[in-house]
Image (cartoon, rainbow, N blue to C red):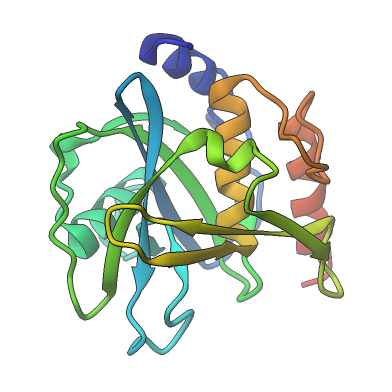
Length: 222
């Protein structure tokens, strides 16, 4: 098992820096992928969006949302949204890196921000946005158990990954799919240094170049 320090060092090596500064101006959003260590295992925290929301209602996702004019950068957006949605304050997050942005089907350019939080963090979900908060061992997303995949929709690249997870604390079952599943797979594989037990459809030897190529292809179609 890798230590937290080793995982932080690995993830930092994938930080995008200014590599995507040449992208055209597009509507932006960010998500925070919160990691923490529990009983020697790395876990991540996810939310179930309120069924009352206008978009992506009732879906599992990471805390996040659209960039506000007052946000200084992608990290600021992710941290602000996490505080608004689940009460996670910025000083409770050790930001590790920003990963390569991905294009959501809505046209938003989404930047994943990875950070470590304390195991003791107790979420206070905003009921207008979040109906549940739960945690999952990160290695769940590189295991065949609970995983399935189908061909992606027209215009997408690779498979559409899907997971069913049963939270033993609440007994609730959650369906994790689409972009959220892909980001979870990516972070799990990079952080744990293990290839998933299933075909992922993207290159873990050089993920930056691979995702840059896909993003450029999507942008060229705009």
